[in-house]
Image (cartoon, rainbow, N blue to C red):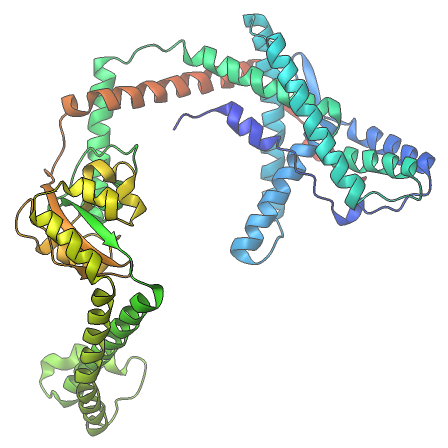
Length: 475
């Protein structure tokens, strides 16, 4: 994915007006609102960064800080149940926002030196966007937050509240123009890198092969998940993968749920039985080799009476036939509910009709209707972790390319699966991926050149940051 400081800058300067408790100041007339505004303007004019050719004050970064603070607080609350940011978080956010503001200013100065500017059409677009953003924020504050007895008082307070949040028509227009200028400068810098050498390409290929080899040796099951991404290129393939396609037919929800419930009941009973049998073996095995089992058994509880455990085992064994029958009945009912469609599909497969065409006509899996699965199928192996076990087991049981399975039920519905191809393990070879790799490396080098050049410009501008002067007492 293309790295872009312009996109990062756009995020940092996103304007999302969120009223905080300290904004709720009831005013008494237009004059008080104007006095409050003048006081805030004095505080916000404090310079908190300087560089050769300019400076940044508190107001310049207030909108970006507030927007990102609110976003982080929401994420903290979502993940941790608390919206509180630590002092370290706030310091880091200040640094990010302020350094971004300086970088944007330096880039704009460089843009002027390079003769990069906005066209009349681009300026008009910026003005329109800024005006629409201002009106949306103003209307929101006026309707929900502004205080005052008259329309004039509410108007004055709304503008004051927006100023506290770092929002003015002028700032919004600056953001719009700055984003476009930064984007143009980045594109200009990226254009300075036009080619990738064979040496760089070979180095990148070797690095990717090494990385994928390590990744898929450690976690071979993750390969199938990675291959569901349309833009993904694998540089090493683990053993044992094949591709399959399938036609998914969905029964009614309650019919499918009954299968899932019955299967879970049987699986739970079988797992519980296995645990009890291990426990019983540990209790009745006098051999010294049972020491590990005894330790595992007594780690969390005192050993139970063997007869009690045996009684539980016999009780579970007695339940298994009924649970097995319940599962089979649920599965039979599920198949029967879609039998007419299945019979029609199977007859057409046996008649030699194109499987892809049948997927398009009958299939209810969106993944089979979009790339890359529509062309390649799904990548499945015995190590796969992203497929339903019944689907996976059936797909891997097919003996030869072109074989088609009997209907099998998963948590998604009823599948008819076709074995599409074997996937060659190992690395693909540079020539097989040259075009894709060339585009990747070129983009990486362009990104790096752009970022390094901009970083150099900023360093040459001798920025100085005064974080200790950045306060919010007047907000």
